[in-house]
Length: 589
Image 1: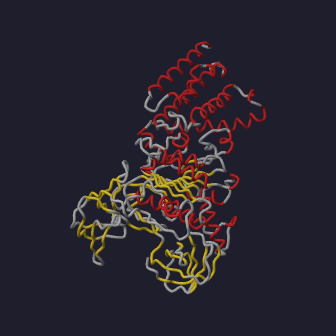
Image 2: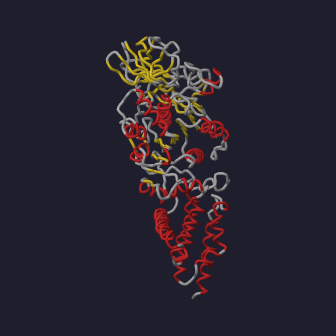
Image 3: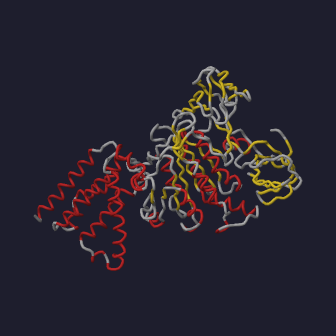
């Protein structure tokens, strides 16, 4: 590091430092504070003074200590070795730091984000003499058994390829190519650096028309998320935000998962760090970590690093998107990130807005979610970044600022219900508070890939759930016995739908994941029961007789008994249902 002194400490206020005598500093420049070399970032400049947020504990610092500039913004090292790694909020590898300092991270300790001593087998994909543009793929590295890491030229570099190394084993710091343009001759390594606060450029945005299949029926069928889309998961303590994100991380059809533990409790993040390496990827049969990057920034870590961790995760996601992968970012939770913004804003003595949050809270939330999308990349491929952000409103109050602002900038909303969670109904996603604005966009995919009647069937079951809500208000006043069988049947079908379809058991080998085809078949069985049962009731069949049919119990258990690859069993179930109802109708003919 070039020890270029750019100023000295004047004032210390927690993680926020005021520096004086600033001679040569830039906005958002990475700096090192005192001779302990604590990592910081310039966040305000005024004449010869600057405000710096420090990403480490500032205990023991004193005025007059030097501040060293780096000449570059806070940036990530991007290259082979990211997959399967566990980083903190500013991309320090936690496993490496533990080897240096034990279980507690010492101040000023640093380690390279990518191991410089490891060799990767590089296979060139281009020949010298061609013109390259930013984002072009020049070779590949088999990073894990599932992920082929494509070595791409940094977006800000272009020119003629003077040379490229032959196929062989190289470290991430060894030059593998030389590019020349009118300004300079540049050596290219497998590592590139990119500022975390600047979105990586793309060629164009695409329409969001392909769903992110999660295997969770309440999500895929009722409130689907498109690849490249954004969703908020708000819910109070214990409603299952983290559990829902774990299920999506394991089962969704994204190529790569970036899981950001932003300000979460230490014991909760410990569960993630210990359980994720043990989880098996259902598609490859190998460790889930072979397609996962973990960023751990717990609530007892410095608050400034918590603020940066969100950008660290989404920048890594954009890097793999530029290689043509579909990436899902799990941000758990954006409320803790917003609280970090509030604390830093207070330390800087800025004018607070509602509930003490800074006035620019909505802008920061919008900037974060805007980095999602389905893109035509500079390399000529297609890739996407889907952002799934958990929100932790105090007391489960969805009217608080973070939830409300997030709701403005996402197109999908999975509201968690405490009553469902207390009843052990998981996922505890409320069918009354949730919505998805991607329905029309992805309906064509469902129509072409699953069934033509999917949109109509989904609309019908949602209409039934709304009718149930109105009937339950009546039931509270007069009791269920006062309703005619035709209305009580609505309540019965909705209860069946909640138990047999919406509720899902993550510990059952069959029920923990459902393919889109199985989800449609299950929905079709329940709607057949509703349609044929309603007709039977009009012909005089009683609700009691309908519920006594043996096939109704088989419908309730179908999520456990019928596997994804056995659709003919649903055909048999519908046929048995038809025969049972016809038998009852014949008695009243």
